[in-house]
Amino acid sequence: MKTDDKQFAELMDRLGVISKLLAWNILQGKETLTQRAVALSSMGLERKDIAWLLDEDPDLISQTLYQAKQAKGSKKEGTK
Image (cartoon, rainbow, N blue to C red; front, side, top):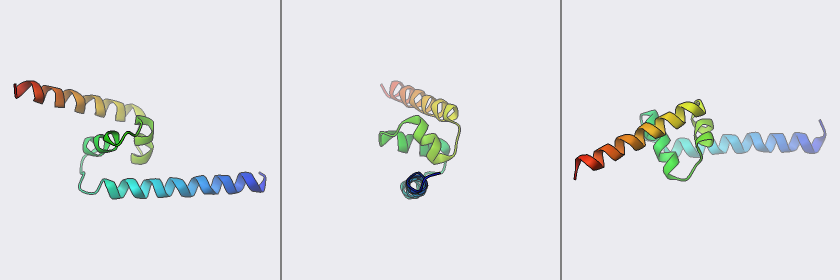
C-alpha cells in the first residue's frame, strides 16, 4: 500500500471514530433503537449511515424506521 493510500485509510478511520462519537453525544437519553434511529433519520441521515453509526443491520434500521412511521401515522389518525 502506498503512503498516500495508508494515510487516507487512517484519516477515514479517524473520521469514522469522530462520527460515532458525535452520534453518541446526540443520542444521549435515547434509550431504544427506535428512538436512536428516528433521531438520526430526522437529521437527514440515510438508513445505511444510521445502521453504520449504530452498528446495526441496515435492514433492521429500515424496518425500525418503517414501524416508527406507521406508529406515528396511527397516533395522528387516533387524535382526529
